[in-house]
Length: 470
Ligand SMILES: [Zn+2]
Image (cartoon, rainbow, N blue to C red; front, side, top):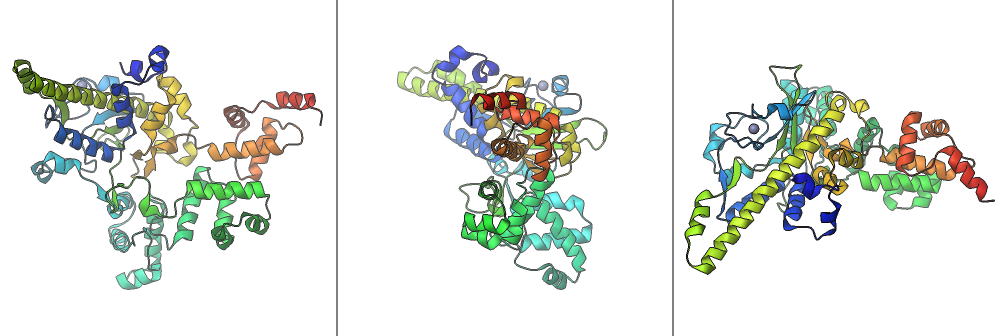
């Protein structure tokens, strides 16, 4: 069903105008969980035929269950090393407390957290109890851009704690998501982000030195002067500046995923939460893909019966329209959740070592590869990945697009090298040349990136060059 709607398998239907059904599913797929909650809330308030049933149901088989994942569907959701399931829970950090039960469902789906809370959740498990108090103080002092207007020495003096402790806590805060929070200003904030990307192997090799040594020239936007100061070719410096502008954010508190309309800085919960079962530390990862509602959505069955019995034609029509719209919404929501689960399952399977290990364990993967594997359109994958956050077992928060295409900067460098080559370089030679850009990339990976950039192998390139006399 989903495949027929979203896949590239069914080319005949693809040529037709996209159905309302498909458009709605795609729209829901693109929403991060916070926006999705708002969407569900709006739909519930506008459509009397739609209702939220506040009981635990399995999103797959819709059986009533005591806990998720549903025991009956567990087999379907287990891969070699992870259990991936759609979860209606809106608060991932703890089981639902009594006070949350007392709130209306609308109040509960509105939950979002502030920047300080968001950072503290990540930092708290990494530090001691005393250091946690330092973290709380620092996070309370942030200005509206997310910067810390005090020096570590001032914080230490005020709290009467060693400066070294403040520095250690500050370092953890700086590295939490969004990277660069609690920096002293724009420059330091950007430097922190470059260092994080360097650790991933995706930073432009010149970016750090531009920020550190030539920040004033960068700010003046004079590329020629900047190239002269760096002693580097204009094209490379231009690429570095583009990298700084596109990949770094001078304002961590206004990261992309803050709530657009709220004006305040409220941060939403992750879209996907990856944890370990505390009772089975060696067991599979538990991967929760959050759905938006605190229960499950259904078309009101009583309203369905009533509509059949109504005699007034215009009223009957109105109720029918409500019912149709509710049915569409329920169906699209189910498809959205199902697509998210399939995509997340595949990502977790491929990136298991990266999730439990370090950045060095990252496996190159593209949206196109995943699309092919799942028989989706690439745009479906892009929508599912856009603006989503994944909380790792360590508590670290990563953007879901960080699981994909991290090779972009390296691929840019490969293109640069091939463009500048006097004679066609082999993949081994390109690999060597990449070292000068600061990238350590194996020959096989070079071959892969080269083909992703539609650059032919060396022997084909030299033959092509031979045909064109210089
Ligand atoms: Zn089930």
